[in-house]
Length: 161
Image (cartoon, rainbow, N blue to C red; front, top):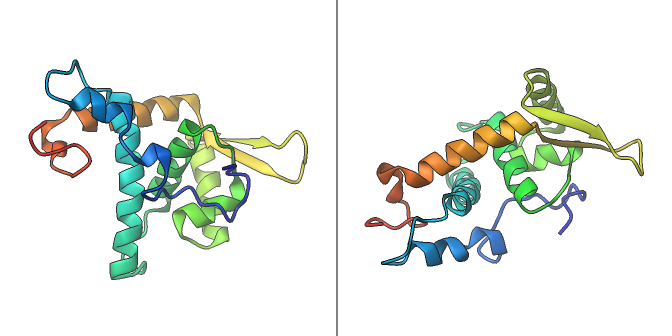
């Protein structure tokens, strides 16, 4: 699924292959070596996106808005899937108006979190990705969460692992 289509927000669902634990689950079995914390970190990011959408559906979006974090999570999971994200699709991922998503993308680009790239095939399109430093920070952050016993209570990690 190409993320170039703005209608294809990268919020995972249960059928999303990367939403499932896959190999990471196998490494969590009793007797297994160290868990695959990179895969678990990606799973946490996917779970987080899904949990935020559920919260929004239940409580509404007026009280809860964190477009910068939604954009970071969306771009992290899109990169892990090998997808390119058009700047116009950030509003869908962050569940904010287009102008708000573009404003946040500018701010985040100015701070070195994002990189904007013109589409070489269509100069009207702009893709946005995490900078290498931001990618590394997100990966480290999510992997640390996967290692922390306090974060193992959510169902994707299991309470006793």
